[in-house]
Image (cartoon, rainbow, N blue to C red; front, side):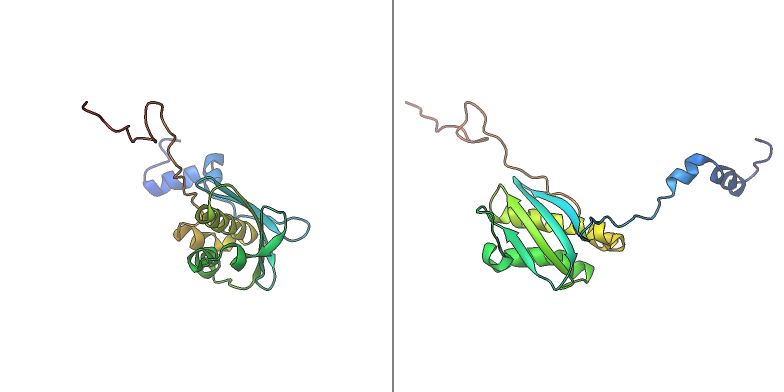
Length: 168
């Protein structure tokens, strides 16, 4: 076999027939949808966690509040900046107004929750339609923002701040 391979092209063709080379070629991704035609994903940011379901629709966007009732996202996230954050995945993927979103959020503050919902929407979109993955990945929406608050250490006032020094 070694005497058959005389160039790089021969080597590539010899390796192409092996099972290891077949595993390297990534199979096309299949859409993941449940019985109701929805895609589900979990998004996280800081201490906030969002469970997000998307399905084709008219662009309805509902957030489940702590009382268990679904309300419009513009009422839950009143600041325009947070509303803009939630619309970004749809704008990047050019599917604005084509999907209905239902989300449940828990933990953290409003900013962290908005980031978690954005992460969940992005993951659910790429599960629903795998062809949207390159655009969402290039925009950085599929990466979890892993920054969290540093824990308080003993002997310190906060995570790193020391108590005030007194000379006398």
